[in-house]
Length: 316
Ligand SMILES: Cc1ncc(COP(=O)(O)O)c(C=O)c1O
Image (tube, rainbow, N blue to C red; front, side, top):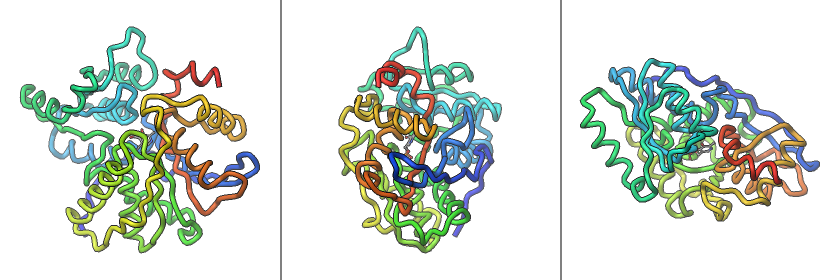
């Protein structure tokens, strides 16, 4: 087994907290605490991806996402911290008054290219073309930092978990899924630690089938590339589908109401695109009316996404 090297942008280990919500207890892994401006799940992946960028003597990082992408913001901030330039290819329109992640992207000096939804469907091609034109050493970081290297952040997340709790005491882990790297890394990490647990991925961007395929391809590809002595158990992955019917960039009033109850009872703030939908699924599937400390909920961050949705949050 050949484990890749990394830098230490993320403040890890992150704590696990026991929360009581509507009279029921559950455990939450606070990956929103991987940093402040660098908060959320993306930082664990960037530890590996940016180590490689530095080794390759890159001057520039190119990456992509929605205009409120947590990943793009984390990449822009991390690039600034490491003395690299960043160029973000974002799906959305230029705003006169940028907010949330987009504001921080600009504030950290990222160059931003805005793309329509149609253009964004070809974003990898666009990034490649532009990288050729720039004639500089560039690292293209894929959407969400999810490639075989980036998912090491979540392979090692499981190792970290094993130092914090007895893995035998949990039967599953719930996380939001977009580009799939978080769920894929957890699947591989559990196998490497010799545990069979359920990974419940709440798909917020793509449909159930696509999300499942993305996650399994990443997990199996990493096992092959790094010659990991394990098998990926596809039956351990369950996609909790149907929790993002309003669309990735939106959140229903019913969900925001639940998030407000959680914020009032525990001080935990969840975001509209990812963790809010994942928690809604977790509450409906596992929590309602009973303690559920055998299924761990991962708070993958996203707090800056709350601000552009202030109208929804205020009216809840
Ligand atoms: C806050 C947050 N949670 C969860 C996810 C999903 O993680 P992944 O892309 O690794 O599936 C993302 C990014 O896509 C995110 O920004």
